[in-house]
Image (cartoon, rainbow, N blue to C red; front, side, top):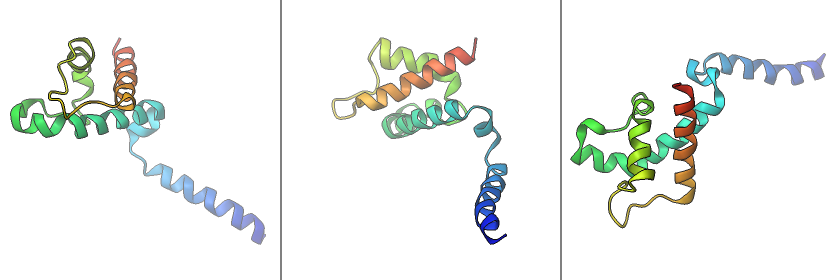
Length: 109
C-alpha cells in the first residue's frame, strides 16, 4: 500500500497541475513551445527598439501571429530587421523565428 501511494501520488499531483495549464498549451504543445521561443526572440531583439520608435508595432504574445507574414518579410526576405550592427540574430534565434513562422502560416491556411 505504501509503495502504491508513493508511485501514484506524484502522478496524481502532475495531473492536478496539468488542469491549471492555460488552454492554449493543451491545444498544441509543439506550437506553443515554438511560439514561446519566437516570442522570447521578439522580446529580446525587437521590442526594445519598437517600444521607442514604433509604439504601435510592439510584439505581444497575442498579436505576434497576425504579424508573422510581415516579420518574415522584414527579417528574412528584406533583411531589414533587426536594425543596427550590434543587434543581430543568432543562428538559433533565426531558426526559432523560422519554425514559428512556418507553423503559424500553415495553421492560417
